[in-house]
Length: 270
Ligand code: ADP
Image (cartoon, rainbow, N blue to C red; front, side, top):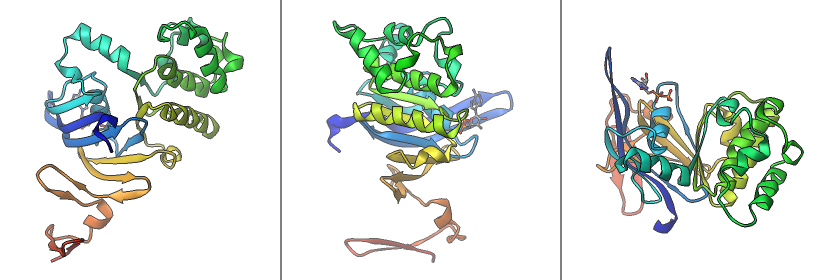
């Protein structure tokens, strides 16, 4: 991957919350790199740190330690006003509840027109995007007159007209029927083809097969990465190798014999 193609970089990201019942280590040293135009999902059981990770990548929450950069910018280092402006230039955030992403009193056309990057042909661009996403017959409808799936497509479409480089979405298909979820995935494909990176947290197995990269979190750490259909074990910056759960169960002693023959490494129970 050429370094110029790197959009999101997380370096040893840590998030600790101080709560009345004690300290919670929600994210424990996550390293993650996403190039331009990649469709990635963060999966893992409830409480594994997905939302905490997404909030830090989106610049909504400051890491306790470590660094997130988007297109080389560390959002957490910016003053609040500047951070809000840079976020508005860089990224679209899509929430699980479709209505939460849109302004109730604006039509589909107006939702996009108000954020379209100013350019002479912006009328054409907004109309084209709506047409391309199958919403051409919905331009004059307010969110309440749209289905949940149409609202979510519109929420993602904001990234196309605003020319955003990144979309972050928390469980975007959780409330949708299969057809609507598939249409949202078509919208995600459209954005990725335009070079937008899409990072979603999801429990929805219907969507995983259509994404490029699936990052599984367990207890706040990356347990495995599936890239292009191949499962990869993660080696952190200290050289620690993380085995996926179905392999780990063959190592009850929690130790391993390593044999490196110069080309390949075998990891066996002792
Ligand atoms: P997920 O999105 O995978 O369900 P979260 O990132 O929401 O995981 O939560 C990870 C852990 O951090 C959980 O134990 C959760 O209870 C805790 N947590 C999340 N947000 C806060 C907060 N604001 N204050 C205290 N603990 C939190």
